[in-house]
View 1 (cartoon, rainbow, N blue to C red):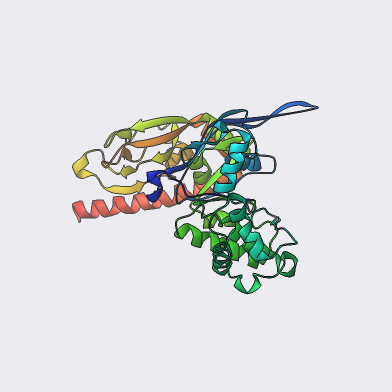
View 2 (tube, rainbow, N blue to C red):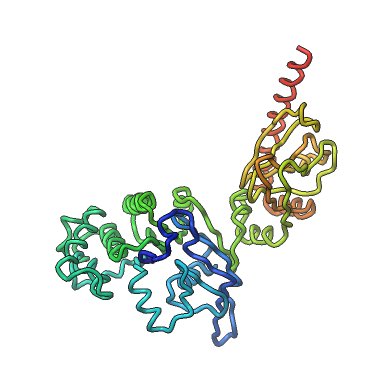
Length: 385
């Protein structure tokens, strides 16, 4: 399902980067004969204008329920959903229905085009429903949208007379009928062959380049390489994105366990995080800011080994090899750094439970040791050569 929000009236909507979607402590509990089941467990999620976001997770993890919170189709048990500055669950049902008609365009995995209407008429439907644009203007706008997705020659055909890929493209054109800035897609390529799926993702990328925001649920890991950000959900809880990016070979439950165990730390510009020759008891992942890895402690004698940024990690050499720190690590001078610190015992447990992650980190250790030795040789040559 693809969902789209209409042009927002906020003055910030003209500048990219403002918070378009804000979910704060969102909880969704369901009751059935077996009792109560919590689908979403306190979701905090912010999506900015201009992002192309993939939401991934196993079946039953809460992905579709999360999207239903954004569309206003479902009600949260607790928490707040704000879209474009509007708290959508402070509305009555009728108000939210009208808001959805004006602000959301939906593209389902199975298209949901009305079979008795032509593609052109299907695209005109949202305009008719909310009374947008003049009666004579609607066919022109609908045709322009079909032309944008390459369907102008199919405009007067019924949905069953075109391919599945063309039906999905028509559904996206329909979703754009009210000029929304936000697309939310639930498995938009799940019913398409690889060629048609590629065409849809190409279209999404083009829409993002033109200012749209896209949030896409997918089971296809290859599609996440096309997005600017990946959000992972497991058992109704969002996995920390830095953990997911830094340790991609962990299973989702393992990522969630690490998310629960890390400690957050903040270091000011230039502040030392690890001193050379000291014991290291944490595996550090960088959430915000940058750190410098340097060969010596005195600033004027420093040989910069590496500058690491968000998603990078350090401390793994000492934890894997069991020795003391081989370098100083400090917050870069440009600003503070926010770190996720995983204790040694939890780091070791993670490696024991994930041989693939252990192998990947061991390779990183060997590569970094080679880099450090090369810098050390160059420094000695400069001093004594």
